[in-house]
Length: 384
Ligand SMILES: Cc1cc2nc3c(=O)[nH]c(=O)nc-3n(C[C@H](O)[C@H](O)[C@H](O)COP(=O)(O)OP(=O)(O)OC[C@H]3O[C@@H](n4cnc5c(N)ncnc54)[C@H](O)[C@@H]3O)c2cc1C
Image (cartoon, rainbow, N blue to C red; front, side, top):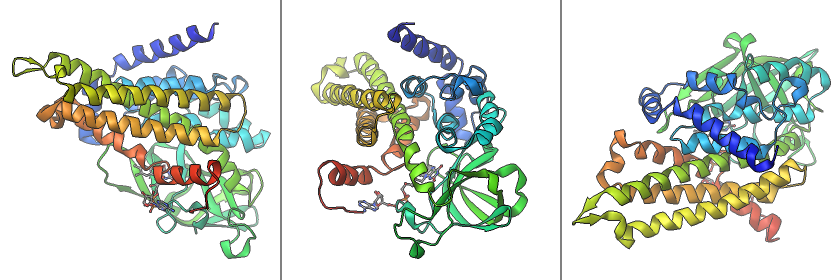
C-alpha cells in the first residue's frame, strides 16, 4: 500500500472511532475524574494500542510514524490519548532488551489487551529530574528481588497489571558511573497485596497519577530486563519513542485549538464584524499554526529516523520541545479568541488548555531538553 494511503487510512480510522466519543464524553470524564475505560477498550479492540508490537506476537508490526498519527488524531478530535498511550510504548524496553521467554510470556497478552502494561515507575520525590539519584532499591534474595522505596507521579497504576520499574541494585556511591547500578524490572502488580501501596495525587487534569510505596515488593529474577545494573541505558533507548509520541499528542492538541479558534473567530461578531477580522485576534492563531507546521516537520523527521533504527535523541527531544511549546501557544491563542467562553466548561477550551500545560514538564521538562541541546549539540558546558 502506498505510504500516503496508509497514513490517510490510519487518520480516517481514528477519526471514525473518535466520533463515537464526542467532546461531551471527555468533558464528563474530566468532571468526574474518571478513566475513559470504554474509549480505551475500543482502541484496544481495534488493535491501535498494539500497533508497535511485531506481528509474530500478535501486534500490528507498524512503526512509530504510524503510532504518532493515532495519538495526534485522538487529541485533535478533542479527546485525550494519555490514558492509553503508555500501553503502546512501555513494552518497547521489553521488546528491545527482554529475552525470548519474557517476550513470549507478555507481548501476546499486551497485544490483545488482556495484560495492561501501562505504568512506568521512574520519578521519585528526592530525585525529580535527576533519575540516577533515585533511591528505590532492589535487593536480590535467592530467586527474587525485594523492592523498597517510593515513587511519585506514577500514572495509571490502577489500570495496569504490570509496571515497568527502575530501581537501584547497587548504591550510587559504589558505582564508577552514576548511570550504572540501575536495573529495570517488570513488576506484577496483581501479586503484591499491601507490598505495593498506591495513593492517588489530585491534579488539575484528569490524569490518574499516584504516589507508590514499595514495601518488600517481590519480583522474581526472571522479570529482570536485560542485565542487572544496565537499566539506565535500556530506559534511555525507550525515551525517544515516548518523546515522539508525546510530541504527536501536542500537535493534535495544537491543531484542535487552531481548528476551533479559526472557526469561532470567523463566526463570532462583535462591533459589527467577526472578531477574526481583527489582526490582534487572527495573528496569534496564524502564528500558532505556523509553529505547529514547523514542529510537525521535526516530529516527522524524528519518527522517520526512529523507524530506520538511526539515533534520534536530538530530533526526538527537539520534536517534544517544539510541539509542546507550539501547542501551548495555540492554547493561549484559543483562550484569548474565545474570551469569556474560553473558561466556560461547555466550550471545552479550558479542559484542553489545562491538558496542554502538562507536556511542558512531563515526561521531561523543556528546561532539560534545552540543557540537552546546549550540551550535546552545541557542545556547551554540561549543566546537569
Ligand atoms: C501528571 C503527571 C504524570 C506523570 N507521570 C509519570 C509516570 O507515569 N512515571 C514517571 O516516572 N513519572 C511521571 N511523571 C513525572 C514527570 O516525569 C516529572 O514531573 C518531570 O520529569 C519533572 O520532574 P519533577 O516534577 O520532580 O521536577 P524537578 O526535577 O523537581 O524540577 C522542577 C523544575 O526545575 C527545573 N530544573 C531542575 N533541574 C534543572 C536544571 N539542571 N536546569 C534547568 N532546570 C532545571 C525543571 O525543569 C522543572 O521545571 C508525571 C508527572 C506529572 C505531573
